[in-house]
Structures are given as C-alpha cells and as structure tokens.
Image (cartoon, rainbow, N blue to C red; front, side, top):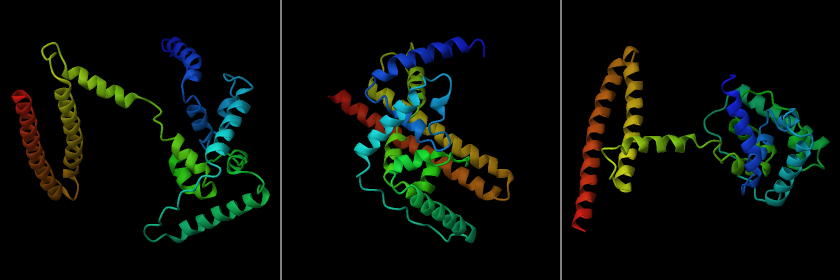
Length: 244
C-alpha cells in the first residue's frame, strides 16, 4: 500500500483538477447521491470541502427539477409468475411506508423525500433497489436511469485495445483496420464460447453428465460451423477488395 499511495494521491489531484472542466462533470456526484446506501454521506468525509455537500446536493436538485420533475414517469414493470405470500406481505409493508412518507412529506418533491429518507440498510445492487422502490419515486427514477447508465470505468474498452495490440505485432504490422476488427471480434467470440464449454465440462460430474456431454459435442460442432462460415465470409470480402 505504501508503494501505491503516491500514485493514488497523484491520480486524485489530477482528477480534482480536470474533472470539473468536463462537459458532464455532474455525473459522478449525482451517481453518488443516488446511491441509496450512501446518499450525501460521502461528501461529509474529511477529504471533501465542507461546502461540497450543499453544492452538489443543490445542483443535483436543480437538475431534477429542471429536467425530470414534469417528465412522464415510466410505466410499472409487469409482474411475472405467481408471487409468494411473503413477497406480497413485503410489498404491503413497503406500500404502507410509502403512504406514511406521503402523509408527513407531502409538500416535498421526490428528490427532497429521497434525500430526507433514512439510509437504506439493504445490501443489494443499486439498480435492484431502484427497481424495487422506483414506484415511490417515479420521476426521480428517470434521472437514475440516465445517470447510472454512464459507465463508471473504461476498463472494458482498454481491454479491447490491449487485445488489438496483441493482434498487430511486428510481423503483422500491415493489417488493415477491417482485418483487425474481424480478428478481434472472432477472438472475443471464441473466448465466450470457451467459457460456455468450460461450464458444460464442469457439469460432467453432475447428475446430468450425459446431457452435458451431448451439449458439448453440439457446441463443438456449432463452433466449427461458425468458424467455417466466418472464414468463407472473410475471404469473400477480401477477394472483392482485391478485385477493386
């Protein structure tokens, strides 16, 4: 940790310097506030300025009032399957809590009700919490959908660049962009199929070993078929390019 600490400090300093200069610098603080287990607590830590909590909360509230207060709410999700009695009791309790919140905070908008409500103690994914409680905040849920749709990291894209870097080597430095694109796509496809095959092979020791073995053979045959079709398609496009 002592070796990593200087790098983290440098990263934090650069982030604080340049983040506010981006076009959408409000995405991160809005996402923090819309995390039901944290809300405004993160801004109360000592590494934040004392005025940050009011600044970010007021800006988030203004964006909600401006862009989502009068927006059309999302229709409720359809109920699939038969619900258990316990699940219906939980929904009754949630509805009662919702009615109680309306009676005491009827003058507040959805953002104010959400911020003033107790911190959630449920250790469930954020999207799951909003899916379960979105009926209490139909307009604020629209803001959650737009805010949390932004990826928190570009690690996935970086991995794709690393894969393409391994494709273009010193001996293959004249590959066209289209060829690199096809190779990376096919390598990604093979990796996903290998993960599926590994899962099936691990199932051989279970009670469905025979069925799993049959599925593996079918997957192998399908993979060979896809490989052949992909090779034919790639060479077909290559021949057309050469003719041109």
